[in-house]
Length: 329
Image (cartoon, rainbow, N blue to C red):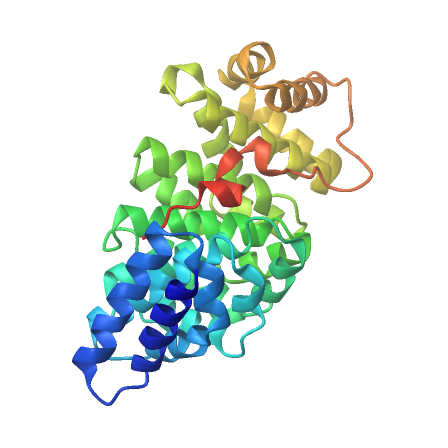
């Protein structure tokens, strides 16, 4: 282990070199070590690498930026606290994501979005901190808005990051303010890839759990789109239909009778069969939500609950919120 300590200290010392080639070589080695040998991650963090990695995210050198963000992503799997406690890391990640369509390296943008998701995968308090970084939230939404020019993997990692941010209820209003609702429904309507639609509906189910979402959903005919996804004739996956059920139920819980009436009208043409299918064949959580929504749709409930439906990792992204599932780069 002492050999690893010496090697890491030597590599970290090279991150301050005046030679760009030396810095890039050191970054590449740290990236590989943090990927292949989890035991080196705390050593790298303790050796003072994180501030250098954060500073490198502002570099105009794409290789430097790519390797620095990938190393941060690898560290974030187990070294969340050192990253979150290092001043300037979130601002540096925000810088990379914010310039996704201009100066940032595409691979760095994807790693930065994945790092946000990884940091939020298991610590509730971090969701409050990241949610307060409005530049991060806005930039992640903008990646969705520019989905035609954004790589699919970057879109998916941005969706995962937004899902994690939305797990904190107070962040949902900010997301709605930054027009996440039209961006998400545009993905569903215009992208169509199964994985993208599943992940987008998972975020929609979370965002639906705030009062600000009600008007935003109306503006994009969101209830109608979700009802279409529940129509068995559209061939949506079970995961997508479970997410649609969760979103509609959360909307009803927030909006009461008025929204319940809108949902009843929307599901009257085929979507009831989809809700019943989730009730009968879905996951345990999906069955529970579908049963509750079906009662509201059939007039056996008024949709007025004591607070919003709370969706945890099992209801939509599942194990993706488990830190052990985060990929190293």
